[in-house]
Length: 338
Image 1 (cartoon, rainbow, N blue to C red):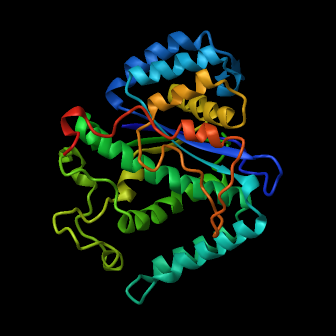
Image 2 (tube, rainbow, N blue to C red):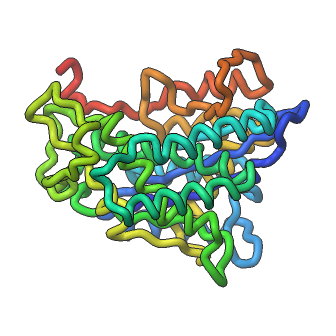
């Protein structure tokens, strides 16, 4: 499995009168279709506008956007996305959420944890305090996206292409080609720790009829004592969580090169943001649903860092509603009703 990740927007714009939307997207493509998909994309690419030699979604016409969506649909690509409207937040919301997050990092430390782990947690807390509001918001949107990616790609392909679950290749668009930015370093070295804890408290979607033979090596075999207390005991047959250290880090890279997968995820992620800010016609953006898995709670959930729910209608509310239901079913026809 190959997962390409990119964002659109600056994650800035706190407390503005107008929406300040940023989107983060992941394009999940089965490895066995990559050669065919990239070959067909190369034919289309020569007709697409570029900036500094790279195809950018912001430059595409609506007909070109539809052509790319159709190419991805025919080749079994899945698109997952998260978004945030920074205009819905005040600086005090971000700071309170950050303070709670810093405290949560060490809340469950006990005498059973190693001095090295305690030191690492303290270092993470120090770094977290220095994060700008924009990077902190992007971090929270990333948590939301990647948890959904893991749920959807594993459950979906356990029914269709189970061999794809034997390895996961993560390729993230790098914003700086000369060095790894502080944000990218944080993502590589701290994100997995947070997601590991989340996966134990909120286990991913594992279907009883899914084929996980090729995924077995990612299940925890020996769980550390300090993690075992978080594992639910209601199902003795359920695997003790997923080893995200292995799943995320075995094949993981940032790239600033114009790779086909990164250009494709840029097109779709940017297209979603263009739709939400009113810069793409509905005949084009509605096709994004063709790449998304239908979820009861909706395909795209705006991330909120507020502690009090504030329901309000925004200029993009109708667009989110129309994108609520994806056109891909999580279950195959054979598994419907099971």
